Length: 498
Image (cartoon, rainbow, N blue to C red; front, side, top):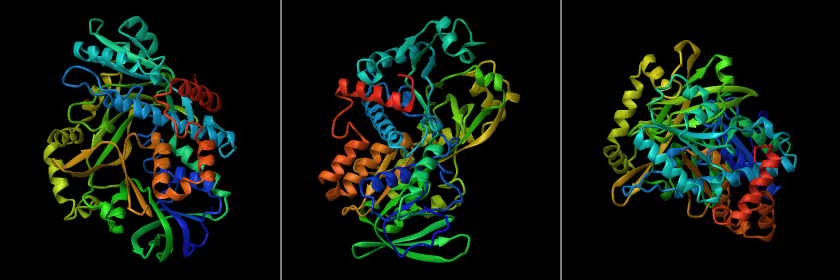
């Protein structure tokens, strides 16, 4: 793979965007069929600089251990854990593939991108404590959440999370859950490692500072128009398959393809910011990802958390993210991105979703208008003794939430990921955000099954899929013995706490 290689006129596969999704799909396809030719295009001058970057709200190995928005409380008081089980299973599948990469020597060291960090949920107030207790009871009935601890004991909580408990009103009712199996994942490093593996493969070329400006169908193929930002020249490449993994830039490109399946999709951009700790003594005293409850109307990406992360081998402590609004679809996108995405076929879904999400709009406006004092007060909910001088504000990336048609409501705002594929499987685009990166492996497996249906059913591909994902074709959520054995193996290979 080379950033200087001349662009071919034809390729078997074109990957748009140099993030975790394209990297995962490229590595899988090249393993399944080594003779595939792959061209990769990235508009920026570096790999993984958008959503996959370590600072861009992609650092938690999302396994539903601590994210309360994955376990809503229903009107009858019960806690729905179905989404949590699905996400926990998906993350285990991702770990299987990463362990395979280590075992095969495709990636040399697991420590560069994944490490053990306890996942915790922390709440206060009688009603929230009761909810967390019910959540714990419901989750621990499933083997995927075996080992999750629950406590209302202030003395024990001070041992678990000293920063969170110090300076807190001793009469305040609080509780927390703790899962030692939690992880921190640097998806930027993982993405780079995957592309480094692809670098030594034949017929794989990466082109940085190349912007895909158009995608058009030509017979059974696709013609992709690409502009070189360095030379200013444009070229066209013909391909059998296109994957649009361009983060916030995926929706406009999907719309350019003109496939019927793209009709009705819209995007709602949400930006974010972190408070990043500058004091090493404070950073050393906290070792957990502590998630709380989201504010009413807030998007999942804004669920507050006091977050231990490993960034380029150094321990960091972040709080946030604070949500915001921008009409850009990418960090360095255009202020016209949102307006250009509005078409006749998605106008009704956009308007309907907007009317149904007025609390979200109010919330985002309030976040944009926050003062430094407001941000500090939000931090003090999780770290009562926090001082402004110990923290600095940094950008936490840009997300585009999916808006799609809904037969009942006209349009609905989705807070997950959506893979849109043409009926013949020749083009696919990934839209949306969380849990995104953490579930990249099962997402790409499903894409391969859909877009490479005939090949995926051959004995050769089936055997290779089972090598990459030993649990392939089985349910980790339903088979406790298999899930426990899988976790034991991947924890050993990835050098994680069991």
